Image 1: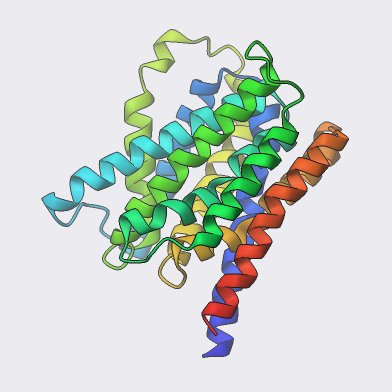
Image 2 (image 1 turned 90 degrees about the vertical axis):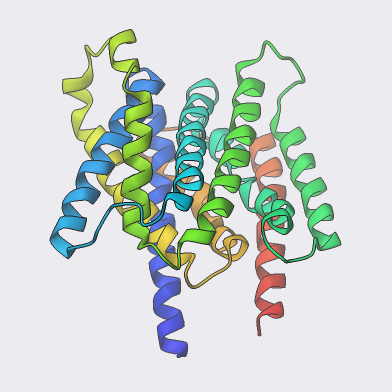
Amino acid sequence: MKSQHNNYLLLLALATVLISTSGALGKFIDLPTPVIIWFRSALAALFLFLFCKYKKLKIGIKSKKDLPTILLGAVLLGTHWVTYFYALKLSNVAIGMLSMFTFPVITALLEPLFTKTKLNPIHILLGLMVLLGIYILAPEINFESNYLKGILLGVFSAFSYAIRNLILKRHVKSYNGTVLMVQQSLIVAVLLSPVLLRFSLENVQSQLPYLLILGLVTTAIGHSLFISSLKHFSVSTASIIGSAQPIIGIVFAYLFLNEMPSLNTFFGGALIIGTVVIESIRSREKNK
């Protein structure tokens, strides 16, 4: 049993590394954000559809009752992706990822609204720590500042992602994680298809290799593994175990984009990641 649990942890760790590539790719790809997200969702849907066919998994929705929440989850996923990539473009990978990575604490605060669990007072304290971390990240409270806009969009992205994960939690027992991801990616691609008529597609050919990595590695594989992990961990715990995402993402940004975080980013980021570590230890002790 312990060996099986360790295997689940390793798969979740792999999902964390793969999803972490989104920061550097989102900043690097030279295309309008809505176009990037359309390709991300369309390519992910294609790869996952082929995988489902190979594994003989049915991708249809099993019950009409599931349709509203699966559709809402897809809308929230698309919102999360678009606002997150705008946050990366407006600021940098470190600030974009750290702002978005407030989602574990947001998840912990919101989970009692979706499940029978009670709100733990420590989550309010952790939420205040996260707010302080965000305040330190912001160079100045100036709504004309792109960095502040990036932080606010990152936090909104985190809020969308947290609610989407909590909504999908009810489906992980009856749907395969890959099936849920192909459904969600396909819905996002359909909803965003009008952007192909509005924005220039001039650079698509030169950016295609990076779009393929984003669609296959980051999204199709990374997010499918993450959703599958919800069968074995609570949403809060799965989110918390993935706390290395911003750190790995910042390393990728330094190696491939030569981005060096500022001192404020280190301090604010340390507070945000610190809350995640505290909750991780607390959750582990509670589940012993």
